[in-house]
Length: 195
Image 1 (cartoon, rainbow, N blue to C red):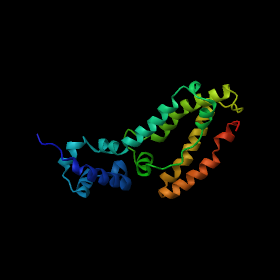
Image 2: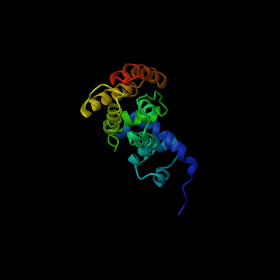
Image 3: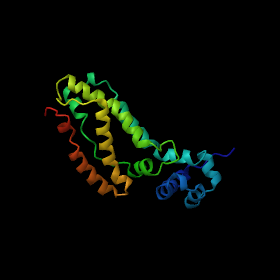
Image 4: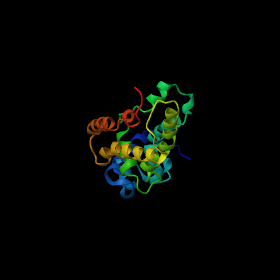
């Protein structure tokens, strides 16, 4: 049995990313991906079972990074200092994985990531609410909100942050809008944190 030549992997991945970004998962063509990568479909199938596995490989690192954010937020908030608990509300304004986030948010229909944004917010809601309740227990925040209200606020925030990606703004434009949105969604003010 022959061993797959791994030197062609970057060409396949780059061609696949371009195809999915242009046409979305459903309309993307494996034949077109192979043609643009200069490889045979057999070479592609030595690496991936099909189109969805190829798509998932493109977004895998981004999904793992986001899952790590949830894992970090799953640390019991009772183990954090007051300062660490407050810093949990600082927003990361980076678009390090711009193309991969666009694939997840815009072009994932037909894959297991079709409801990515909703599932992400759902996962973040539970852990974020636990942090809020601990801050409230310690008297760091005076605002009284329910878990359902927290979910709505997080949904609104992430929708606002994701909109520039969904509408195809450049990475720089999306970063600028993200900065503005982080100012608009001032969690410290919304939750009435003592500063």
